[in-house]
Image 1 (tube, each protein chain N blue to C red):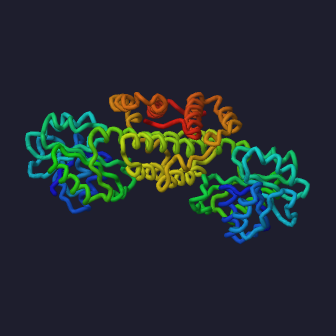
Image 2 (cartoon, chains in turn blue, red; image 1 turned 90 degrees about the vertical axis):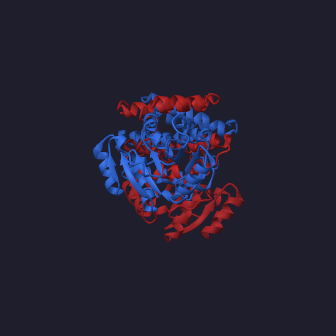
Image 3 (cartoon, helix red, strand yellow; image 1 turned 60 degrees about the vertical axis):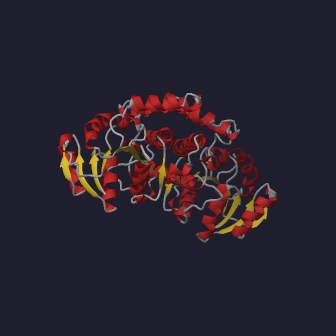
Length: 260
Length: 260
């Protein structure tokens, strides 16, 4: 397929590379910032543009991977080409595109991307949605050329996926940060925790989290929890996190907490 | 070395296997529960005992891997043999053993163990502490036969390590659970999140968490956060977690939060 990338951030970079590696032709890369456009276009052997009016209409698909609040305005400028437009945002409903074009879809890779780290796209869950059946089928087919993990997911369900990703990725990363800060304050090396972090994530690759919960809270080990809270006396925010999450885990252990 | 294991839980099971594989001789395995003692002893080709008075004094080291609150009582019963006694608890100071014997130490593997999952002990950080220099050296040498990641860590620092492990392991696992529950409530498969979870943990193997934080909070994307909170209206506890951790991440982004 001939594909035009709108955006040059983490998602555009990784998605563009995966599409190119799968044999698709990247026609153009657009970014407001000409240098960013040029850099990604160079890697993808595409043309760089930084003025949206310069888009080449000889393309099969526009993929918008910009900040969420830019999607609407960009779609407005692309719609008259009558070419399918998808965005890659977990948090943005398809309706934002449907305001401008009937050829609207979503191509959402459920992964956290950093420019400095390669991602094996074959394992990345790709959640696609099309405004009509034929477009959904086309997006699904395209997705399957780069990922073995493709699902058709409605905008309503994608919202929940995006929210759950915050709990499964963004919040754990912040907790890694707090752990690192605690260690640093006592001149202890974060390397001591890295094997624990990866093992914790590996366990839930084959198990459900409830079955592998460890630590003082799931044992309702009050003595250890009190000792930990004592160590956090000068850290009111960490203390609050500790108390809140420990209470939740105790309740999970008692089987009381179930999301309905 | 000739080693006696007191306990037959997750730590005793994995530590015993690693010691045996490294060529050490496991003399006995003690557990209150005769069946548990017999099962682990069978795997380690050791003698099973379920009465502490039956310990064989022809051993070089007692390793106590029981529940934390059992360590004191067991040490009291073993001390008269004048053989070094270590425990494997992150939360228990060496003083609990020193009450009973001068030959006291700690042999703390900083990892989360499940009986159903193999662990490569070579990568497990082993934090050792001895009541005197010669014992510290002996424990360090023993630790190095099973792990490439051995540190001498005082009881005061081990307390912090143990606390930080709760933030880096137990709390993230609980957040995986909440994510899974959110998905389940909307008939979405936890498999969709598993690649994200492992990628999040892999990123911090080479980076510091603050450098790879993603999500709406670090961008201070109020619109997305408000939409997420709206989805949690019927989940007051998850809403509280969401708001608390998002506020923390916003502050982290602003560089305000530093543990002193």
